[in-house]
Image 1 (tube, rainbow, N blue to C red):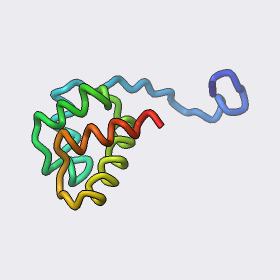
Image 2: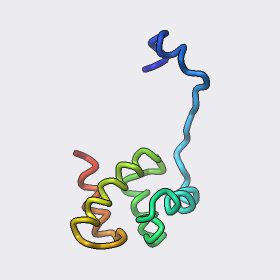
Image 3: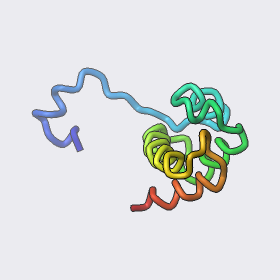
Length: 93
């Protein structure tokens, strides 16, 4: 979209292409991204990536926000698959 607008496009110094994270990268990066993921089982992180985030960091940010809401409402300190399923249901809205 920005490339189509010369006045905006000219302000971009370097165009960056961001590829999606592999599962191995997700397992390394996401626990460092936010404390809730540091306390989450690796299998649950893989579950979240497979069903909602798909290696996309923007999706992880959205999922993290909804997961935090779920944790606050349930009083839990880390997400499990039940919490994650609830958060997944909020991503479509």
